[in-house]
Length: 97
Image (cartoon, rainbow, N blue to C red; front, side, top):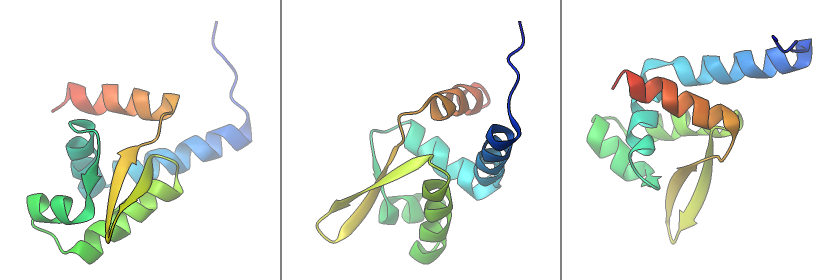
């Protein structure tokens, strides 16, 4: 039986998928999926991007409920949100790694 999804839920899902589908964000998610948490500076170094650009992408993923920030002194690190959407996204992305 197919579950009917309401318009509000479809809009939320579409925004989350749009946020996650940007290529740099997919690279960031692949890094985070392999670890418990990753700090902004570590992501910037591994992807050879500026901290500002990485922060921008992380904020977009946070805004859509995909990541959560954690402060460690002066550093900001990110962990995956514990949601069904994130688990499904991880299963999808990790298939293609």
